[in-house]
Image 1 (cartoon, rainbow, N blue to C red):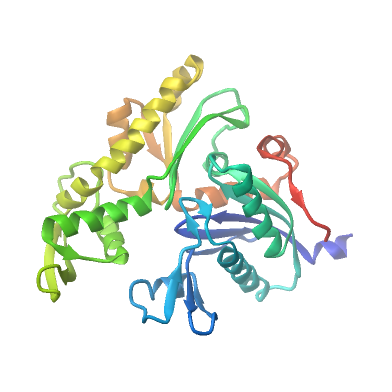
Image 2 (tube, rainbow, N blue to C red):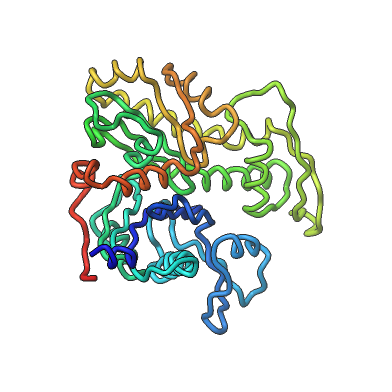
Length: 348
């Protein structure tokens, strides 16, 4: 059995709308790349995956298509998702000598239907896993942030990813109440593209909107005056034009989406049992995911909800780290895994 164990590894997969992270047992996070694939339409051949595909975004000729196989946390293109997972698993295998993955833990949004859950299971098995457990993202986030999820106390998580925002109140190893909304990093980018188009009559692409959000975006007013030159296509002349965008513009562009997240958080708190709400006032709210890196987001939520709000350490990897913690000590988290669902299994 000891010899056989050398040929099997357990893996955690944070399959996100924007990024995919893989945690490999005994090694940690080994993949952190965009969930993108570049296809040659003429041959059907995959040209690039992950970072290499992202470099081509909005810069490709007609015969090359960039595909995002997940929309709002849900698999919209089964075959492409399978190819992405296969590509990353193969990349890891090339660095080692095992041939199969015994168990895969896959993080999913809380609101997936049974059909959507089965799609995640099927695609992971098809990519090479033997047994698949699905773990809801807020649970994985809380474990990754080392919160006491198994205790009878409140752990409120707001996980702002690429396609969805997951809001959950967790206690005694499970989500007491959860909401999932399709307002997250991707929606912020769309808001910025629309704002620049309406306000400046300039067309920009998603990569530029992402740069604006990261470089000068903020959820609240800040003392530092940030600005960034932006180039795009003038809607009147069709010719290139450069403008100077300020942080106040980006804040105005994404304010409505941020407010909708806060409103959903308030609604969730109003629906929660009173004892848990009392705990929350003492323990606070934890924010994670790539969206939590927006300047002043924690202070924005704290001001609106009137509850102490903190961003978890390294919020981009909190879900993957949570999956890794479970993988490294699965017997300890057996009750949490059984709370999530029964595993999908194939013969190894």
